Every structure is written in structure tokens, then in C-alpha cells.
View 1: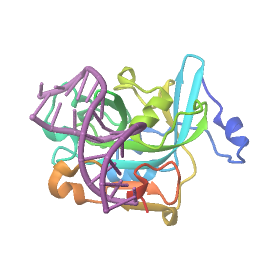
View 2 (view 1 turned 60 degrees about the vertical axis):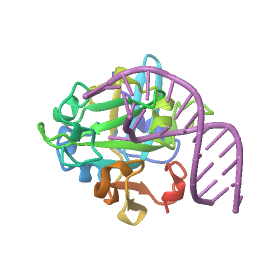
View 3 (view 1 turned 45 degrees about the vertical axis):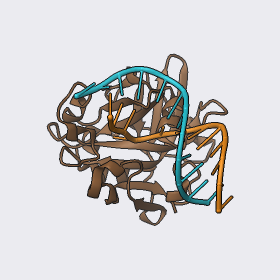
View 4 (view 1 turned 90 degrees about the vertical axis):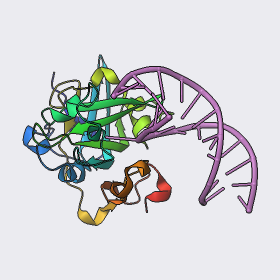
Length: 206
DNA sequence: CTATTGATGGTC
DNA sequence: ACCATCAATAGG
């Protein structure tokens, strides 16, 4: 089923072609994908529920050598999807309560991904559910382990192209919650839209 | 405002 | 035992 996002964004006077991001978008360095995902539209359609938001915050996890990346633990049942083809969902369950949604990046064989940490609500987000944080946005969009490994060019969980966000509006800083990764925690692998209220960890987001 | 703590369960 | 989180709580 095709979904015409143009009609819905028309209400916000935003017009662009509703087109899924192609494989080539994802098959690039994770840092590039993380930066370029800012402003794109994450959509989850399950049954007759359509929920979508604009990506306002991401983090790159660049490979097995990156001690903050789950793939640094090697190839396991959980991390296997990271070694696979790009453009798939990597969803994991954390702290017994939350899910986190990632986009697999880089060519097959390179275990890298981009964590989506903040969404600006656009369509169908139930009132009272916030989207400023990786766990919260998964709850708001109904993303669970059921979506793990899903192809993001499909029809249930997918990402639509949208106008690029200019560099003047994008900020960079260290990733959140990865102090265990030593020097890798210091690297500025996190991207967010400046002053956007749907960015997580506001204290660290100036 | 910062710092700390508890909830809660998959993974290895 | 650890954890790519979050809300509640305590303290300055």
C-alpha cells in the first residue's frame, strides 16, 4: 500500500516527494547516514494505525572497532543484523522496559548503525506520549522487537525522504550513555537539530 | 538546577 | 553482571 504523505504534510505547508530512502542512502559511512537522517520522516504503519515523525536526533555507531557499538561484542544472535545489508531496522530491548530503534548502515559485512534518539511528532502520535528519547519514541510509534531486521524500504516500518536540514541548524556532540566506551565516548558522533524541543538530554544539547 | 536510585528483563 | 533509558526523588 502506498501512503501519500504529501497530503498530510500539506497541512503544514511542507511539500516534497514522498519517496522512501534508497539502499544507496544507507550503504554509506554511519556518520554520513546519521547526519543525513536528520530531517527525514520515520513512519510506522501497523494495521490501520499510521504514526510518523521527523527525525531530529541521531547517533552513529561506526563498527566493531567502536567500543560503544554493540557489534564490538562480536557476531551474536543479537548483533547479527548489524553485519547484514544496510537499510534494515536494528531494534533492541534495554533495561527490561524500553526498545531502541536503529538503522543499519554501511555495506554488508561492516557492522554499523544509526540510533534514532528524537522525533518531532507529525502523524498519529497518541497524546501524552512523548518522542524525545530513544525509548520513548519507540513506545510512541509502537516499535518493538517484532520490527527487528525489517527492511526500511518496505510498507510497515520505513523512512521517507524530506528536505535536507542545513548545517547551520545541526549541532554535534558526544553520544549519550556510553561512558563505558572510554575514548570512544568522547567522539562527536551525535547529531541534533539546534533548539528543537524533541531532542533528548536537553542539558547536553545546546 | 544536579545527582542518585529503582524498575525490569534480554543477553552472553 | 551488565545495560545506547526513564521517571521519581532528594538535595543544594
